[in-house]
Image 1: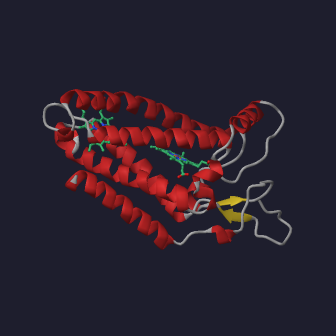
Image 2 (image 1 turned 60 degrees about the vertical axis):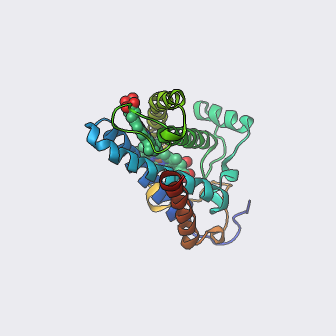
Image 3 (image 1 turned 120 degrees about the horizontal axis):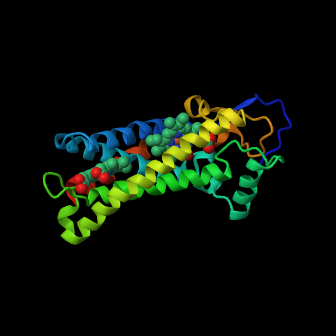
Length: 230
Ligand code: HEM
Ligand code: HEM
């Protein structure tokens, strides 16, 4: 952690382009997956294609969470239960906890939960079947009992995922309305005000876009292998 001693600009790029593209592509695709799953059966083909795209994004985010820039790296938003509790208390009590530029301890917990539920949703989809027209690409690799089990997970987990997403959106709106802190705009333009935050790092921690493209290509190839070759 660095101290702000020199004349620094007031804002810092916190969410790099790959994280922002990841987020808004994920939002569009999750909406697409839910919509196509509820349209006539002919749209299931599109549901599966969208599912593969989501799986690609999730693998990309895991790689970027390991080798990406400071604020994207998972290790920089893993907090101890004590820190999460202290932060949660501060939201409801008068005293202020420290201000975070990256995901705050509660937000981080929600991010990990959503990523986990999305991974479960996408993987269970690969083994799901409607027993009529549509089989996920890995259904033929498992017994019909196991496929039924994964189909059950796919049906139940979507409810948990939607609850988590609603909580996530409500939390973002509550920060805006009650804490007067707009977290949504930085997810669009990337920048946040450094004012009062201790967790700021020099911009040199940025990672080149070509590295993100390599991670994305690897992710797409992994999904291609699972769907077309395995
Ligand atoms: C399908 C719906 C959504 C999903 C699955 C989703 C998922 C996520 C994920 C995984 C992250 C972590 C980003 C990262 O570190 O890579 C995130 C962050 C964020 N999302 Fe969403 N999101 C959804 C909808 C929305 C909507 C509609 C908004 C705006 C109202 C929003 C605003 C944000 C913001 C502001 C952050 C950063 C929070 C922070 O500053 O810690 N999200 N979201
Ligand atoms: C995160 C990504 C995904 C989301 C949000 C999602 C969402 C859904 C939803 C909401 C349903 C309807 C469940 C119900 O009727 O209760 C469904 C069904 C289904 N999904 Fe997905 N899905 C995703 C990924 C996938 C993938 C990757 C595949 C396979 C390639 C897949 C294959 C299926 C199949 C075969 C069904 C029909 C199951 C049945 O009718 O019993 N899904 N999905």
